[in-house]
Amino acid sequence: MDGSAEGSDERAMAAVAHGDPAALAALYQRHHARIWAFFLRTTGSRPTAEELTHDVFLRILRYHASFKARRGGFVRWMYGVARNVLADHGRKPPPAAAREIDPDELASELPSPSAVLFATEERRRLIAALGRLEPAQREILVLARFEGLSHRDIARLVGCSEGAVKLRVFRALRRLERLLRENHEPTPR
Image (cartoon, rainbow, N blue to C red; front, side, top):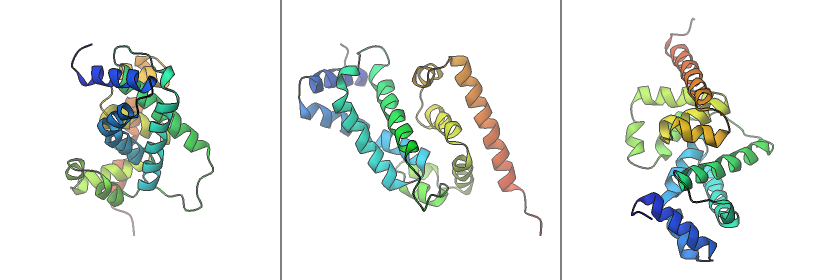
């Protein structure tokens, strides 16, 4: 195994499989901020992001045997677990106070240096428009643009072709552009 982070993650998963709690703690330390940011961007709620992040690492512990060491393995597998947690969360009835993503809250809750990225008004408008996308479109954009997953990895996560992912990203970006234009046009009096 090489000295890369992925190799280190795979070694940690092997240790988790052998009952080593410190290995899970190392994985948590390395990846919890990414998973938390993914959930914050997809749900718009800090408490929900914290709860779902916790659930991901519990599932990593519980379902460690389903992890197979392979190229692009752990991070893609971890996001697959995260998507399943998000899907399960989506099946729960929404809380009485369900709301759209608040761009100011999202911008203020992101850990540095991401908070700096969302400081401008244009970034706030982008986050507000992102919050108005359908959940499936938001998820695909978050995975592709914020989390930096390749189209190939996203295709494997969502169970479709790479071409279908490219088309979904394109359509989501087009919808996002329309929402940004709508929000930028002055409202009639």
